[in-house]
Length: 70
Image (cartoon, rainbow, N blue to C red; front, side):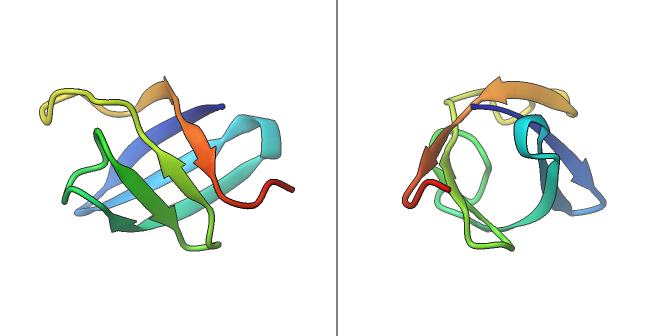
């Protein structure tokens, strides 16, 4: 699913256009949003693509939702 990642100060946020959902990233598996699992404040988790740490934000990427589907 397409998601937009942006950084606000030191925090990351994800926007999911298909669901009109905007949530803060509360956990990152690798300490960065890239190449691992991230968890949102609403409990959703995504497997994020592997990208360079210095990737310019905001960016829209294809991420895979992990866990329960709605």
